[in-house]
Image (cartoon, rainbow over all chains, first blue to last red; front, top):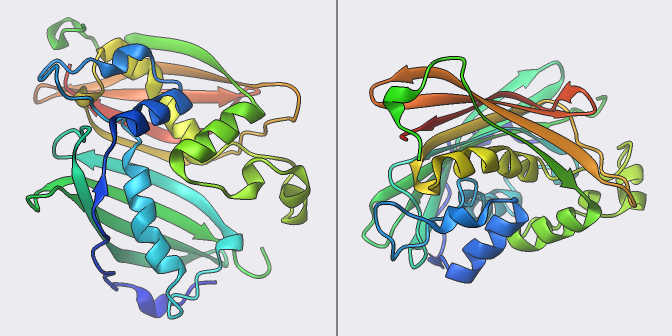
Length: 143
Length: 136
């Protein structure tokens, strides 16, 4: 289950995550991106992250919710409902990113809870780089 | 590289089929840090009431944008990407799950194109409302 009272709760900023070139290549290979993903038309020197890479940063923030005793989020009953990434600019190798998660909404539907998290990802100069929006479905006891 | 002025709504811009194996799931677990055992252990998948080992939803999301990135020639041109996970992708221990991805121009607005993505497994769509706004 999940505690509905955490709706609106904002979690602390995560420690800085340094985006590594080889990590991006590993992630690109794991998500079957073509080798041409390494081409960045705007700046050849910069290796651009695959479009779903921000999930790695989002995960840092989600861990704070999972370990929060107030949230009472039972991860064994969780399935991923939907996911969105909105980019202000591409993530590139060398970026130092932090993230801050807010519990945007908790809805109940057919005995399940739908928990939507908004995770804002910032660069080292504190500019917003990407917003990751994730809805988890927490199955009810009878489901 | 594609040119926005040459695109038309309804045009198919990319189509590709991917073989997802247990090895793919282990590789994605390592790359993403998502080591939930339902993505590699049959016994644990069964214990929690699943019909078998499932691909990570985020792997399906990542694979589904791959042909679009290939078409664009640059991952930086993806501005906004969203999916809904509607059906699980079951990955047997010793044979691949085949994911078929098709990407179509859904809309063109303000110098951007909305690419609508269909990803199917065993004849069913596994993603709902999978859309990427791109700037070709």
